[in-house]
Amino acid sequence: MGSGVQEQRATLTQGEVLPLDSSSQSEKSYEILNSLFSGALAGALAKTAVAPLDRTKIIFQVSSARFSAKEAYRLIYRTYLKNGFLSLWRGNSATMVRVIPYAAIQFCAHEQYKGLLGGYYGFKGNVLPPVPRLLAGSMAGTTAAMVTYPLDMVRARMAVTPKEMYSNILHVFVRISREEGLKTLFRGFTPTMLGVIPYAGLSFFTYETLKKLHAERTGRSQPYSYERLAFGACAGLLGQSASYPLDVVRRRMQTAGVTGHTYSTILGTMKEIVSEEGVIRGLYKGLSMNWVKGPIAVGISFTTFDMTQILLRKLHQMGYTAR
Image 1 (cartoon, rainbow, N blue to C red):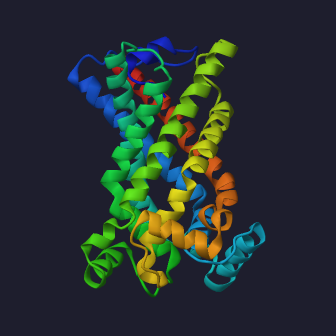
Image 2 (cartoon, one colour):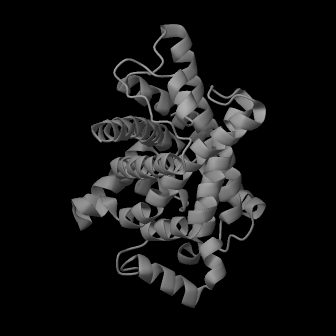
């Protein structure tokens, strides 16, 4: 992923189209729209691809049932037999409502933060050094999570409840507001923010670093698609592993109203999980499934974003030269 025109000039490879000079306001606006659309598409494709695994992981995270690959398979199979194939994607509509703006904002913010930090540290047009590279990812993830958090709460509720309880996204908002109060829509906000800092920071940092090392070792400034997928998979593996306990905590807090628990604080939730289920079986419940779905989702996401940006820039260049 480039951080504007100057970085693209530095990393231009054969067959790619050089982005137009973005000094004008219209070109800057185009780059922002490019990032927003590419990010939205990347998030939608990635989350849809792993939605059944994601839903299964959430169900185990918010319950005291012991997790294993065998039990996860049984849950998926029972859901399929009872409610049909499409039921495996229950809550995915809420996921899309959240993930499309989330991914669009995150990727676009990352591009903007890279440009700002590059200018501040004197690395404009070049790959950022490690600390600013990590900071740009963390800031991008935090920005996106803050804007879209209530939609994440809705998605979690829909994933762990039967269809009869919440018929659609709007119904979730209305029922939570009436029965539990508006503040409930932000329950789990703090662990989400604490978790997204290492998750987004490490994900973007790892992906950018691997692309940088690849360019230095191979002499090719742009990796192939399958290489991007592999880099994204590594990024997802590290990012999600580092923040996973906080992911479990936020899910417990988000779904407390429908699971019979009264989780209220991060430390209190952690203590209750550890006392009832243990550290590994509680705070890391479902992590092995995340090691499957996480790399797939993040790999698809980063690759889709990169390739869509390149395609849109080529189309924009062709349209410009045609005039």
